[in-house]
Image (cartoon, rainbow, N blue to C red; front, top):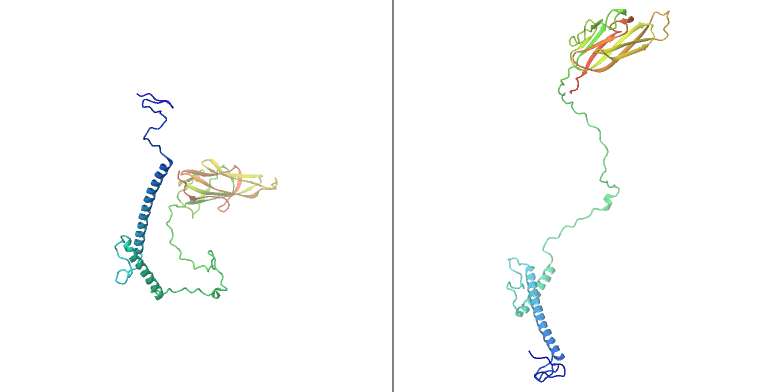
Length: 306
């Protein structure tokens, strides 16, 4: 390994390390400039070549587009002046293409001068505004006057009969004007026009209901009393269901009695075997006639299903 020589000293070969050796050349500004110019010239050549290629490509595209829009003649061939199907190949074809363009422009001008071959379209004549004067525009939701009602339609057929069967009973009393000795009215007689079955009457005065349902129960008693308060009850299975209370006015000890009518009615759900009876205080006078004292039951509906 050779020792390095300091500036101003000679090495083994007799020259200092900082001085140029004989025969060596340093790069100068002129050399750098010449190299840059050469590089720029090469790039310019490449750019010109690319531009030329692009212009040639655009020329070919323009030719294809022009050929696509060229009209055909009546026999299916292209019109006169149309360039051939072969694509231009080089600058030798440019004069021929210019001639074709001029011929095509001439054909278009000649066709325009001859006029359109299609039949002219018919113009729509607008209606005179004078015809519409005095007529109001109808909005979207306008309606005319309502017409007369038509005749009624035919009556439809009757619907199917239901399964509900009504049953009823009317009991009248007998005995005339009498004093009641028991607390239950027991002199009931079933009316001739009422149902004969379904409401048997016991000797005690209880009426049994054999068909379940919702019944309308009504009752009336005409009293002949001088007591201040008159009352009686219609009981279902021993429990009071309807109660009638009436008061006698201006009853004095020297008056034998006064007439007073007491009427009650209501709806009751009755099961099969229910007992109906009329209870009232003992030792009371009443008018036991068919049109003054009576009891009735009418089935109006079936019991609702559980």
